Image (tube, rainbow, N blue to C red; front, side, top):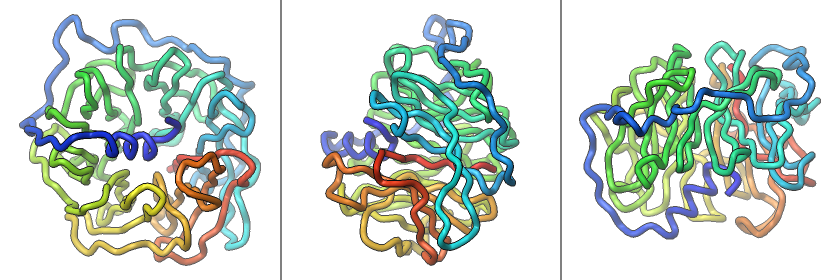
Length: 334
C-alpha cells in the first residue's frame, strides 16, 4: 500500500456490490470521538531545511520515492524544466522517516505541504513547511486518515477517514480542528479534490457497486455521479479553470488517463503511450499533466515506476524520474 490509486484499486477487487445512501450535509463528529483529541505535535526527524527550489512555483513538483529509504517512501521536491527533452532535476528530500511518507497537496499559497504518513503506526494526515520543517500531525484516529486536499482559500482540508469503519470524506480546519463528515454511506468514499472556486468536491466511491467519480457541494449536499463505466474510475483532479477533470480509468495493468468536462461529458482518453497512468495532477497554468506509471512491466509485479509529464493534449510525453527506484504520486506546486 504505497499510493492512493494502488490502495483504492485493491479495495475494488475485494469489495462486494453495495448501494449507499447520500447525506444531505456534513455530520459533525460527536463529542468523545474527536480525531484531534491530542494536540498536533511534530513526530518526525526532518532534514536540515533548505530553500524550496530557486525556480518559479510552476516549475516545482512534490513526489514520493524510496530512493533513500529502503523501508518506505519519503517526500521530495524537484524542478520541472520546460524543455521537451529535460527530466526532473535537483530532487531534494523533505522528510526522513522509517515509514511511508506520501505527498498529497500543497496549500494554495505554496508555503505548506499536506502529506500522509505511517510513522505513528497507520496513515494519518500531517502538514509541513515547503522546506520540510515544522512537521505537524493533524489527525488522531484509530483508523487510517488519507489523501488530504487543501481548499482553495486555504482554510479547510478535506480527506478520507476510516473513523466510521470504512472510508468517508471529511473536512477539517487547516489546523486539524472541527472535523466534519461530508459523506454517509455503507460504501467507501475516497480521493477528495476541491473545485478551483471551492464550491464543490470531486471524489470516487463504490456506493453504486463499481468505483465511479462523483461530485458534491462543499457542504456534502447535492451528490451527483459523473461516470458510468464497467471499469474503475478514480483519482479525479479539476483543471485550474474548473472546466475539466482528468482521472484514471481501467482494470489493473491497463489503466489510462482520461479527460472529461466538469459535468461528466466529452470523455476522451489522453494519449500517453504504452503503460498505465496513476495520480494525475495539473500544472498551475493547465497546460501540462504529471502522473506516474508502471511502464517497465506488469501491474504491481515488483517493477519500479517513474513520474512522467505530458502536455494536456497528449503531446511531449517525458520521464522525470529514473526507473532505478520507486517514484510516485506527483503534486504540482501552485
